[in-house]
Length: 194
Ligand code: IMP
Image (cartoon, rainbow, N blue to C red; front, side, top):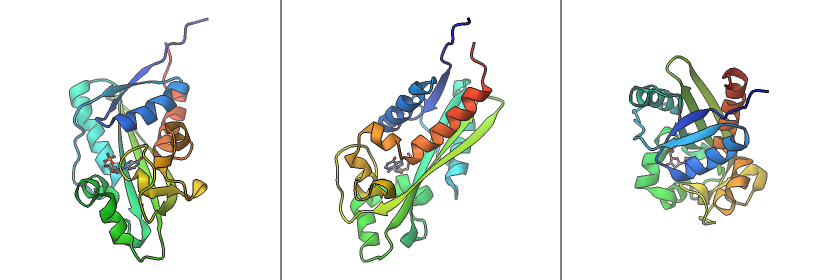
């Protein structure tokens, strides 16, 4: 029988939390994710799909290897989807406390995280998405994770925040895990293992 060798896919990210979440998951599914800490080109666009797609095509110009770019956002219902595609900017400007202030007094605290995984190998461009619904908490809780993790509680585990979970627990529910699982299903069925 032929030896099955895990194929390698580069993950364009400088965020080690994202890399740990995604690589732990894909490793168990037989895909070897390599961290490629190139600067992810973030265009100004109205959807995270556009941001991820453009960044994947652009990164390929530098790497010339099969790669993934992932882009995510937090969409808060009472804020008409803000910060959404501007999540990164919102995090570095108003931050967690700024977001709490914006939803203060709002009855509806529902929100969701969405992640887009864009895969490009020079020929094929594939887009996968994952979503987790939950709520914005009144105050930050938990020390794990990154970004808005301390104020987001998935509805399946309410009132526990993402920041109170281990990577494995977050990977059972998260937007990122769901997008990467969708990618891995397609990838392992499509790409020939040599
Ligand atoms: P990015 O552009 O994909 O890096 O994500 C935009 C912003 O959304 C990040 O700066 C984080 O603040 C936030 N974000 C994305 N994914 C997560 C997550 O899994 N947990 C918490 N915050 C996240």
